[in-house]
Length: 240
Image (cartoon, rainbow, N blue to C red; front, top):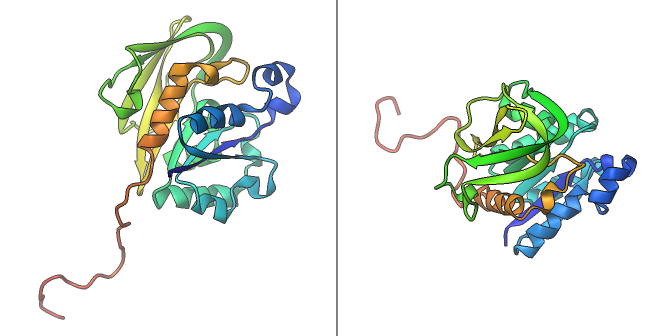
C-alpha cells in the first residue's frame, strides 16, 4: 500500500483562534483524515518534532509527501530540505499546497523565487479545469467554486509547468495557475493553490478529491533509477 506523510508547520493552529476553530486538530490531521478514508496509509509530521518529523527513516518509508507551510519557512532546517530534495530526485512524490509555494523545498526544486501577488478579502475563487483528461482532475466537474479564499495572482514566478491542470479566477479580477505539475529527477511534483488557513477549504469534497488524485498520480513508478557515470559499452567498440 502506498505510504503518504502529511507535513504541516502547525503554527497558526497554536496561535490563531480562528484557525483553531476551523482546524481544531491541525491542517495536517484534516488532510490525513480524508486520505485515510480514501484507503491511503497516512502519517503526519510537524515542524516542532525532532528533525521536523522527517527523519531519514520516515522519508525512506514515504512514497508521497504532502507539504503545507506559511509563517515558518525559515525555520525548516537546510539539512532536512536537502534530505527531502534527494528523496524527490530519487522518486518520492511531492504535493505542495497553498502557501507552501514559498517553502524552501519548493523554491529549491523550482530554482526561482516562486513569488506572486496576494490579497485576503473573502472573495470567491473559481478553479477551472483546463486539462480535463488529466488523472488529477478525475471526478471533478468543469470547475470548483470556493465561496471565500485568499487571492493569489499572476505573475507566479515558477518555471513553465510540465502540465497545467487548473487555472483560478478571483472575484477581484486576477487569474492564477493553481494546479501545476513538474518532474524533477525521478520524482513527480504537484502544486495546488487553495488552502488558506482561516477557511474550511480542506473540508470541500472537490478539493479533497484533487489531493487524493494528486497523491495517487505522484506515487513512485516501479522503474529502476537510471545509472550514471562511466559505462561499459553494450557492443564491441575500438579502444576497449
